[in-house]
Image (cartoon, rainbow, N blue to C red; front, side, top):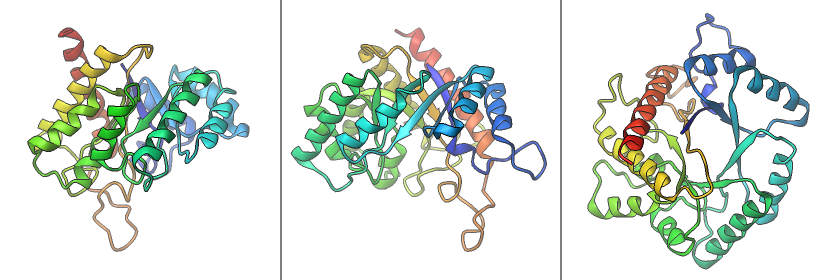
Length: 282
C-alpha cells in the first residue's frame, strides 16, 4: 500500500508557521515528514515540472495525477502529456459525462480502458458525484459488463447522494459489488448529509463502522484481484471549504470546524492499521 496526501487537501490547511501560507516546498516537506508515501495532484505545467520532480525526489515521494476527460480523445491527449513525466505512478480519472448512461456509457468506459492499456499507464475511474459514476446503481451495471474496470473507491459520494444515514441490505449489496474492482481508495467520511465530516479524535463517529468495513473489504478485493497493479494507492483527500464544513457559511467560509491536517494524520494511521490487518489475514 502507498498512502498519498492530496495536494488539493493542502489548500488552506492549518500551518505551523503562524498566519502565513507555507511555500510549496514547505508543504511537500511537511507531507513527507508526517509519514506519507506520496502526493496526488494535478499534472504540473511544463514550466513547473522540473521543480516538482526535484521536490518529489528530494523528499522521496511518489506522484499520481488526476484527469477529467469527457471523451477517449481527451484521455489519450492527457496520457500523451503524462508520458513526458517518468515518475507518475497512475492517473485517477473523473469522467465528466454525468448524464451519459446505458450502453453509450459502457462503450465510453471500454474505450478509455483500452487507451489506458495501450499507453501502459494505469487509469482508475473514480466513484464520484457529477461524473459518469455518480449513480451507484448504474456504476454496478458498468462493472457487471466491464469485468476489468479498475475503480478508485470513494464511497462518501454514494453515502451523501443516497442520504445513507444507515446502510440498508440493498445498499450494502450494491456497494460490495464495486469493491472487487478496487484499484485505489480515496479516504473521506460522509454522514449521509455532508460529503466530508470529522470522524473524531478516536474515529468514534457512528459511520466509521461502515467505512472501516468498506475500506477493509476494498483492501481484500485488491489483494485478491490486483493482477498487474503492484501497489494499492490510498489518497487521504479532505478538501478545503466548501467541502469542509465551516462556522461562517454566510460570509468568508474560512473558519473550519476542525483541523483537516490532524484528521488527515489520523486517517493515514487508520489506513495503515487496516492494511496490516488485511495483509496478516491473507
